[in-house]
Length: 244
Image 1 (cartoon, rainbow, N blue to C red):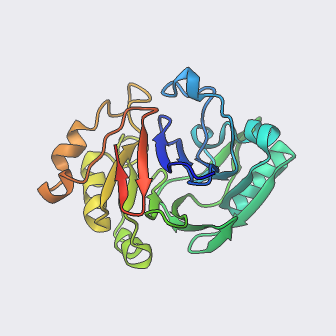
Image 2 (spheres, one colour; image 1 turned 30 degrees about the vertical axis):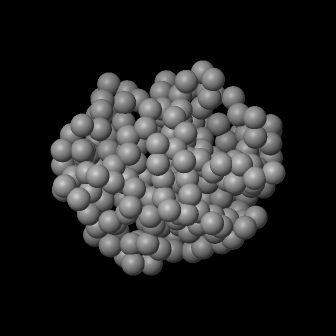
Image 3 (cartoon, rainbow, N blue to C red; image 1 turned 90 degrees about the vertical axis):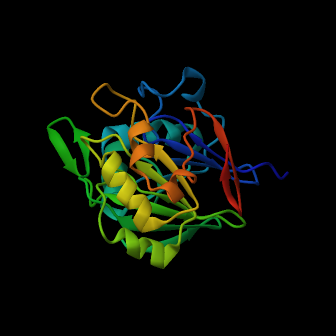
C-alpha cells in the first residue's frame, strides 16, 4: 500500500526516511539516550535499512537494538561495519567505502568524504571505525538527499553537487564538533540544493541553540530554501523536493 514519503528529524543527527511503500530508513540512529529525541520517537515500529556516517556513539548507539528488533541491513564504511559486527556480534552489514555506490533493496546509497573523525567507544578506549562519511540517498521517485554527517565545509562539496546534484541537503550547523553557521552557509552555496535542512544543534548547551545564525549567514537566494523543522515534525518528501 502506497504511503506518503516523509523525512523526519529525530534530534541531533538522527533522521528517518519513510518511503512511499512504507519502508523505514534510519540515518545515524541515536534514540534511547538522545536528549533531543522525544520519548514517543525513541521506540520504532519498523526499520528496514540503517545508514551510518561514522562510528561516534551519538550516531550508532542504537544500532545493536535495531538489529535485535528488526534485523535491518546496515550500510556504512567497510571498517565501521566490520567494527560493529565484531562488537555487536550480529547484523546484516553492507560495507562500502568513500566514492562507492551500492543499491540496497532498490535504494541507491553513495558515500562521500567528510572532514571529521570516526571511532566506536570500547572498554579500553576508541576502536578504529574507518573514515567518516556523508551519504547520498537516491530512492525511486523521490528527490535525492545528501546527509553530510559530521563535517566541516570543504571545497569538494562542489564535486558532490557535480556528481550527485542532491536536491535536499541535510547539514550540521552546531559548531564545536562540526561546522558552524558560517561554514554551513558556504557548504550550502557550494551544494546549491533546492532545500536545506539544519541538524546537529540544540542537543547540548555547547552547541548552537537555534538555526537563526545559520539563516542570517545564508545569501538571500538560499534563505528561501531553508526549512527548519521541529524535532519529530514530518516533512513531505516528493520528487519535487521537501516541504513542511
